[in-house]
Length: 592
Image (cartoon, one colour):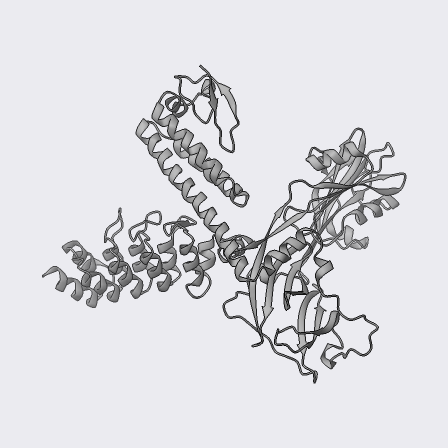
């Protein structure tokens, strides 16, 4: 009899004949491994497999968690497939189902929090996101006074600063308008906001102490816009199509962050310009035959710079391709310009070489190639072949605010735009928890690591409140070991209060051993209060205290009721540099 085969993210729906009449989330007709055969032949395991498939689909409904979920599932499959008996398989399924259901529950809670926090802001954050996603944000932001309006004052200290906006705006929402200016300074052209009272005295604004303006989302917003919403004024921080935050300045002149934003790329990118539909469709689908760079060359960065091409990097190998579609083969090499000025700038292009690949070619085509790249922002230029012609793909890295993907063709001495593909960015409001995780990911850090590096307990409490596992590991270190190592006794106690296992080892080190080795005296006392065991595995914290002469830590251990043994005293006496105080403490404890 045939059964419907239910699948998870990496599997597909199919009809198959199971080995022993039980359905599973994979095709039992093709079951090859020991684990697959056991699952297909066991009714209880097959039901667990179905339950896991349902739990996986529910958890994967949140697109934001998709990539991490896929990685976790692959790791779990490795654990399950290592099993060599039925009990192990059953245990693996049970644990994973619990994890997936907890993840799905946390996702539902995150949505509820996001909606609740949107309500708290009076809807302005949802309004800004919705308006930006419709491409109408610039239609609703304040436009400012015309530049030829000579009646509007210009404060003396703004004389040498670029100004992109100026108008009378009640920016601090106290009922009285201020002279408000949006300025643009430096090579990065970051926009700032300054305001003056009626007598042109500068008004000093303070950032809310509860906001972290060093986080990537707040720190790197390049543009500032002002909107009026329901009678109040708000400030939007953004970078191109990417929204970063919404703030409001109150009558107390304190600027408070109301919300931060995250982004998703709309998977349905559209073709805005298409002069050759088959080529554009192939580019849209990512189905391109890229030219291989596999030819040695003798050109250096110094050759580029001597030719007036301000590049700082050069590809190791060149490509052989008819780059200008004239029927003759050319040699091209990838170039890179990296600048740390302003916001930082990376740009990429192609340089044309002579036939011997020993020098740069000097021709109109060479200039067209350099001009095709060269934009600040990291777009790469990649040649590809399509139906006998050579094209140049100009594409930004995933996640870059510029959502334009173009295809060019050089022919008859001219460069033509063949395709222009646009992928719309979807902005959404982050909850406080989402914003914390977003900032951590932007810094390439685990959220716990990010919280440990910041002062106070606010971020750690937020992670705990949102169900983050207090027994998680960071680079193979338990959170307790991490807190001990960083001398964060406040976080150590918070984690223990929240259920962290005081005896969870960091590879071969228990938290107590870590505390005696490189923690504070207080960290030892805290761990002992929460039931840290003296010997976990092959570790011996008393011996560690003896070796390093940690008298205070040794006293804390003994006071907690741990009695040293004669071997500890013997070791203390035999060390190369015996510590009289250590020996005295041990003698007193051993003789009781």
